[in-house]
Length: 68
Image (cartoon, rainbow, N blue to C red):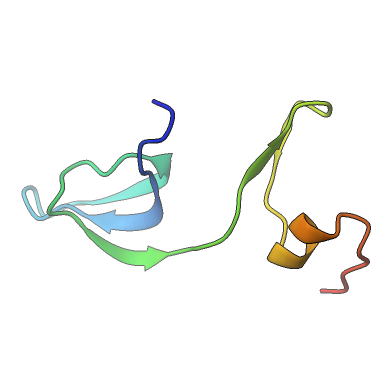
């Protein structure tokens, strides 16, 4: 649902002692722990009908040339 927090991490379930992938999904349980996570920005371009994950500078200045 819109506005609810999601995780982007490999998660460890404290209840079942299992590991699961959380990609843009809610935590399975509030006590679950992140083993490996990623932070950043995610936007949706309505005109292109696609999600984009730019670096922060590109959000401010879309025409910026970035060399990675």
